[in-house]
Amino acid sequence: MNSLEKTQFVKITYLLLSFFNNDLNQVLLWLETKNPMLGGVSPFYMCDLGRTGKLLKFVEHTLAENK
Image (tube, helix red, strand yellow):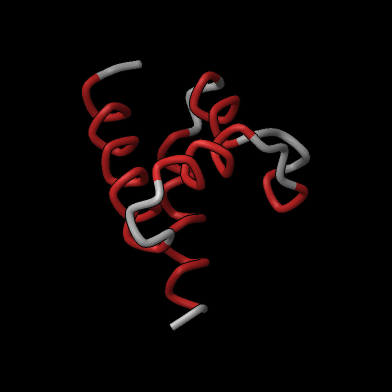
């Protein structure tokens, strides 16, 4: 994971913590769970594939829709 991907992952984590009211267990569960909206892979696996930027856009878009 390069420095840009690390920065993106930190932002994803921050956004998720805000959404889940600072419940780290919920954030970790979301990150570890396979998601059909992400092609059936977990968000952690997306990061392993080098798709952290795409995951960040997904999280930002999804949270914006929930406002």
